[in-house]
Length: 124
Image (cartoon, rainbow, N blue to C red; front, top):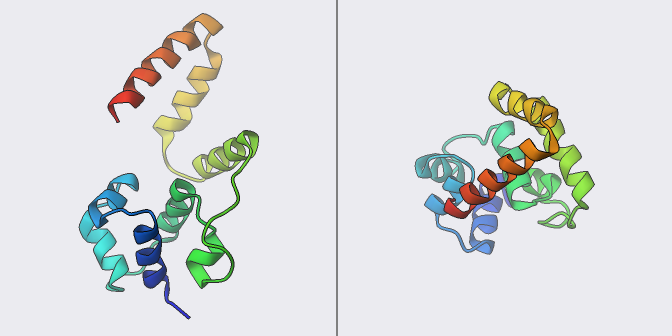
């Protein structure tokens, strides 16, 4: 059975990404991805969770090799619940406060934020 580092390589190649592209999507350095793939450093639990979230990977497959590589597509409501649950467990106070403040806005104010976010997304 493959080790986790081999499954990382398999996933990255399946996505047709370079180490740098894979790292960028996870906000990691290319060298961190290289170290994970070569087994020089262990992959932190937070990074495993991020990989699963970003690439819709089955966490059991990534950790153990059991099951399918990818999770079945989630319904929008389930995805939101999972993302919020992940956020609650982090120390990302800025994102938490941003969401709280957004939810307090009027519908007109929310429309302004939505327009801004659509423009930002076009540049990413």
